[in-house]
Figure (cartoon, rainbow, N blue to C red):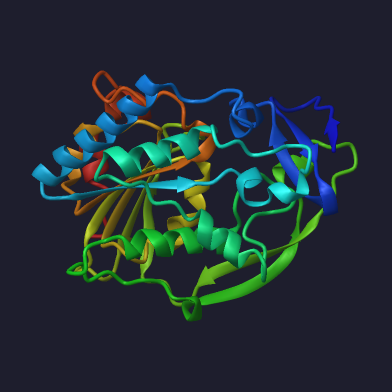
Length: 302
């Protein structure tokens, strides 16, 4: 394993076996993976409270709440970094066990299906930290399977996807002196019925996207996501009549009150599992995103 110097990025990467690159020196990812930095008993209890309170508030307002985990790449392909060992005290392991013993709320975890599928095809990029389209589609399927049976959602099947290939240099490779490339397989939805009707100009946190579907009989959703969630958007947009997406770790209850969605979804990458965000006192939608709720409401196909 070689730690590679970085001159033009705020993180470094680790070179694993067989050309696999892993993110390093950001969000204490390796310290968390090896259990050197983990969640305290009070952190675990705060996670339980915030998840249960979100669920209760959203259900009181007629919706359903789901929280989906995006595993760190090292949690799926750790065999390519033999010197870095996963600890039973890493934050996600502790939180998963704590919730299973102390709460009715369970986080959606696609780890098992990702590990099972990687035996036949890649589910993360070799040269980037993120899962690829196929890995995102697997996680999307697990989210859809968790929704109530009475929901008449359109679920994107593998037969609905078309493949196209091209050469790709991921974000981790791009910071190296001699960037390696990989063959990228994109999965596009065939004959999509959804359209992105709005996107603000912000990059990263505060980015807002609105998708609307020609099928108005589908349920509505609001999603709070990080960069992993962006890979699921083409699939999620096909499953909801209206999907409002915000790049944010916290929840904006004023947005949820405006949209009155059937589903509220939080997607979060594993390395962000630190002390949970404070929902009370979190910035309003307009402050965080630089966009008024009135303007957002106007973004529609109608």
